[in-house]
Length: 467
Image (cartoon, rainbow, N blue to C red; front, side):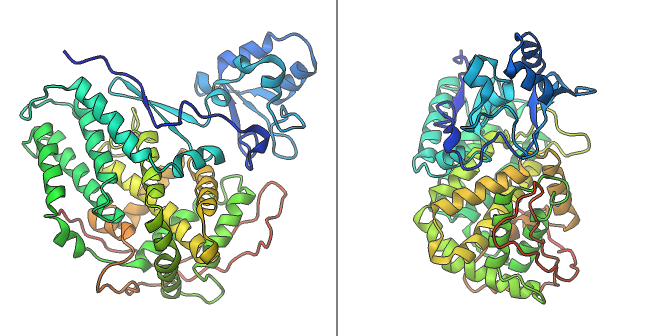
C-alpha cells in the first residue's frame, strides 16, 4: 500500500525569512493588499489605540467580497505605501501586537502553497527581491528537487507496473513531475531543446488522457526518457526555425500588456528602459533592426553569462512549474480556456519567453556589467508587474493564438535564439514596440524618456509539428 503523501517545497521556501527594512522593493507598497475575513474580524476586536485607529481608517471592507480570502483591502496612503508601516519600514501590526495578527496574505507572502494529487507544494513568488535571490541564485536547486521528488515518487509508487493504466493522469503526478524535472536539468541539451521536448511530452500525455494514444503512463515515461537519452529527436529539433523577428514581436507585445491597467512601478520602468535601449529602440527603428541588436545582445552578453550560470534559468522554470501546478494547471480552469497540458505548456513558454526577452535586452544594455544582480532585479520587477494580475496569462494565451504561435512550431520560435546555419533576421514586417511608461505613483525613474512606437505588424503563420 503506498505511503501517505507528504508536503514538498522548493528548498528555502518554508525557510524564507523577510529581510524587512533592508528590502529594496518592499511588498508593503505599490499594490492592493487583501485582508481575509478572519483577520478583519480580529482587527475589529482590538482595544482602542493609535494602531486600532490606523487599522480602522485604512483597512476597508469590500462592498461585495468575492471570497473570504479577499474580504477587505488595505488602502495605500499618498505615497502608495501601506499606512501601517513604521518609520523603519516594518509592519506596525507585527511590531505592536505580534505575528499572529498578520493577515493570511501578509503572513504567507512570498510563499505560494499549491495542493495537487493530495500533496501540498510550496514555491516562492519572485516578485519579492529576497525570494528571487534565494531561488535564482541557488546552484543546487535542480538536483535537490529531483532527489526529493524521486524519493517521494519511490515511496508512493514502489512497485508501479509499467503496464498499469489509470483514467487520471493525476494518479501519476509524481512520476510525471520527476520526468519534467529531470528534463529541465538535463544539460546535454541546450535549454530551448529541453523545453521543446517538454512540449512533446505534454502533447503526448494529452493524447493518452484523451484516449488517442493507447499507452500506459509508466511505460510511456520510461520510453520517453530513453528517447531523450538516445538523442533520437535531435535532427528534428535542429531543423526547427530560428526567427528572431517573430520572437521579438511576441516579446514586445507581451511586455506591453498591462501598462495602462496597472500601477507601474519605477523598478519596472527601469527594466523597460534598459530592455528597449539594449535592443536599440529609437525613432525610425524597424523590427529587423531591433532583431539584429537583439541577436547581438543574446550572443555577446546574455548567452555567455548564462553559459557560466546555467542553473539560474533552470531555477526560474522549476519555481514556475511548482507555482503554476504545471502541467496540470489550476484546480478550476477559467471558463472557456483549454484544460490541457499543451495549453499549460504554451503559458509556461509565454512566461519564459517574456522573461528571457527582457533579460536579453537588459544584457545588451548593461553589456560587460550584466550580472546576477541585474538578473534578480529584472526578474523581480517583471514578476511583480505581470504575475499578480490574474488576467495576464489569459491575455498572453490569446496573443499566442492571435499570432498563430500557440502550436509546436510557433512555440519553438519563441524558445530558440540561435542555430547553426540559421539567419536570425528572417523576413518579418515591422512591429510596434512598447513605450517605456512613466511610474504611476508620482515618482520619476532616472533617465526616463518615452520611446517611439514602430510600424504595424502582421501575424506569423506557424505550423503545428510533432517531433
